[in-house]
Amino acid sequence: MKYFTSFFPILTFHYISSISAADYAANAESAITVLNDKWYNASTGLWDGLWWNSANVMTAIADLGLIDDSFKSTAEQIISTTYSKAPGRGGTNDGGYINGYYDDEGWWALGWIAAYDLTGNQDYLDTAVTIFDDMTTGWSTPCKGGIWWDKSKGYISAISNELFLSVAAHLANRVPDQKANRISWAQAEWDWFSHSGVINSANTINDGINKITCANNGGTVFTYNQGVVLGGLVELSAATGDSSYLTEATTIANAAFKALTDSNGILTESGGIDEDNNLAQFKGIFTRNLAALQKVAPSEAFVTFLTKNADSIWKSDRDAQTGFIGPHWQGPFATATAPSQSSAIDCLVAAAAVS
Image (cartoon, rainbow, N blue to C red; front, side, top):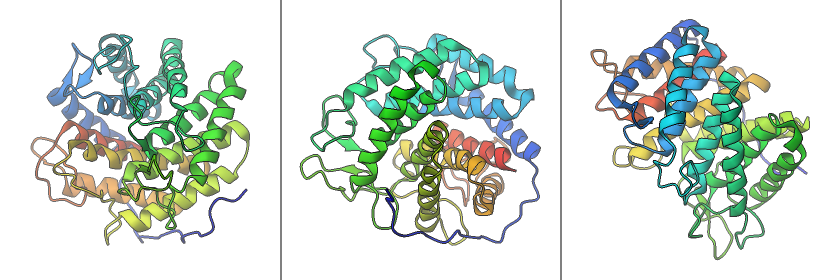
């Protein structure tokens, strides 16, 4: 079944970067050093005491280790420390990664899958499986499918459902004896999500579903909601051999370019990014997943977008003296947080991966 009826043309920004993949990787490693020196606490395994954000930092670190052999041992060491120190610190009720929010759980599941991809450590993959099994208990909304954002059943968010899709599909490709079950979950999620109305007429994704009317709530179109779904569809396509999922992902990606970039093609977050520390994390999540899509559905526009944003980060939103990176990738630099630093790292890693 075809879910989308309109396709945006692939955008071309007429931009060619002079920076090599190795340079992007070196820039990412430099930014990680700054991040860790300022915000990493080895006694807790977290960055600035943040929970779901730390799962995303760890994912970015693992992703760099996967493409840069010189950084791999450093990444493995950081991940090992986080694995031993972080469990139970996020309001969890199991001394691990199970808490009251399914999106928190999804971020950590994807983080441990990335860690497994880097290291081959079965413990990391088993942790992701345990987290996903708990996420399945959220499949109880009144809207004929989907999972809740929270275990108190207060909200049906796009992000929790995208993460559920992505974790299920990732596991389908990594746990052979559970493949059929995980594909079934991923397909059930995508069938529900794609028909729920949360993907609007512009092919961008609003923040959630009204739990009373079961309709799109018209919430903000955040960058990360346009991103996580891309990674989920990439993995579902790999698990099933169905390339139509990649077509759907490409439509969403191109719609995000149209809706969420400035006149120079620089990704720009909707909402009060200066007031809400969490929003500073979002843009990197989009770029990470766009790079995953580029690997299997190559587009010159994707490469252009990622490299142009990475170049803008380094030239316009980075303090040259401290190495801190802010949340506005078009600049000028004003201030940095652990989320803004790690979000920028995601984009630098993505640029390295596709260059």
